Image (cartoon, rainbow, N blue to C red; front, side):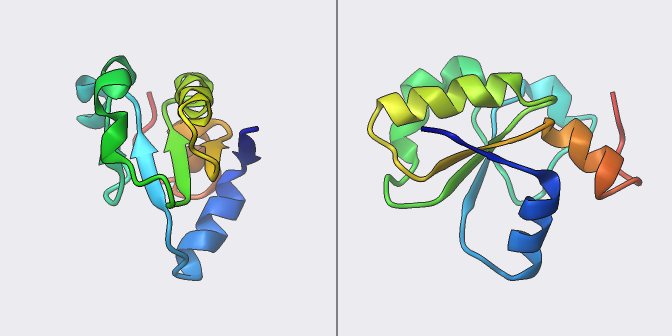
Length: 106
């Protein structure tokens, strides 16, 4: 099952220095607009070919623009045997709205 993680909870994890892997599944052109500097970028259309790059024992948090594509990615990873997988609710758009108002929105 995929946990839904709020942007506020992600911020708390970041501030506490918790270890996790943030994976952005948006397309390349979307990263030109705004991005999480610490995120690993694997576009959704490449995830089936590249998911083995992700350690199975890591906490993985997936993000996209609004949370739809990242939820697809999270479900895919769970189906591949990953167990510690979360979806960032509202994606980077929610982050820009609620956490970082200086981040560009699109």
